[in-house]
Length: 173
Image (cartoon, rainbow, N blue to C red; front, side):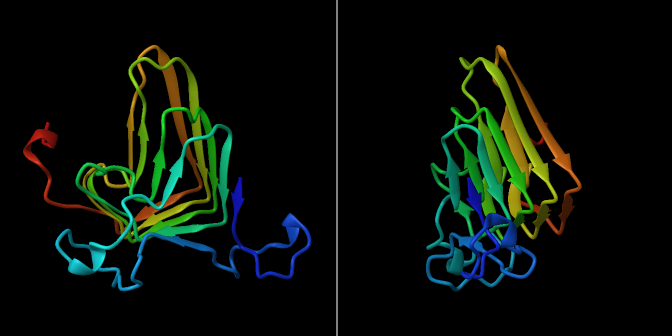
């Protein structure tokens, strides 16, 4: 479990305030991103492929800003959040996911293996997805596991100013 919204004086989790105390997880190594969405800007080349990679189970991210991911090359999925195959249950509360670029699909990406079984449940509550760039399925992409069930729920979440650009021919249907 990872919580944001602290100012450093709290003694209890209930005292935090993510609306006032922004906690930023950033892939922008040099601190030079401009927020401009383009695949060819040199300022983004230093950025981390993925900002957050999840590999445990029963995960919670709460009260965080996740920005500056630049998934590219062999790491072309999940620039903000990459959810690996062991994760069956994950909750995402009050996240701001912005200014991420993904050279393929999904600034949030779930990559399931075809041999997995069981139920996969992911819930996004009170999240904002804005100003992200991808070639298709910019914000969210999941591969469905065979022989298993996958359910993703978005509650009271907002999506805006996300851009699909330079769509590859194989993604055109």
